[in-house]
Amino acid sequence: MGLLVFSAITLVLWLLKGHGLRHAQLEQTIKNQTANGETQTGYTRKQALSESRFYLMLPAMIAPSLIMTAMFFFPNEIAKSKGWSSLWVTGNYWLYSIVSVVTTIYSGTLIDRFTARKILPLFLIPLAIALLALVPSSHAFFVVPFMLFMGFSAGLYFTGFSALWAELYGAKNLGAIKSLTNSVMVFSSAMGPALVGFLLSHDVAFESIFILLASLCLFATVMLVYALRPTSSAG
Image (cartoon, rainbow, N blue to C red; front, side, top):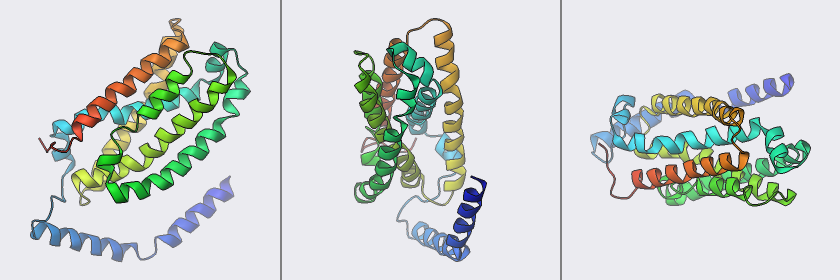
């Protein structure tokens, strides 16, 4: 694994040759667009945080990391609650991986064509379906839609939000804005196991937890759709 990481670093450094020149060209393009009044390209982090829109999007930023980390953190408990082998749950992670990778790749094409603002609003619906799929039955088959739909939401999540920040706030201060949003996502990832562990320690059934987390997805979807509605504006 160490050799693999070293090889990846070497490849990345090679691919980044000439990045300084490309970045300088990007900065010049941004200056020209701003001078011509073509678009707002330079939201600062402070300006992004001053918008109500940012806080409406916050539940959608939090939900995927919180939920998916918790689901991968408690495979034994999920299996026990459904009467399955834990190996049956973890042995189907490959379904999640394949779907998330394929969705990540092809969602980029859709975003380039239709924009992230149009593609992203409903991305949490598959995750809600994944969670609710485990509620009505203990049949082992339901692990399959659970992994597939969760992978679909994950693929849209990874690509969609990265593109959305550039669309909403421009590229000039994109690093500062993404550092903030990534911190939120990482923090929510830490919250997931703690929240589900707390509920389990108080004897809350996993079926109830699935319903609770699916409800969070639906709430976040409503907030995201409202935030990204065509008439929405800064402020």
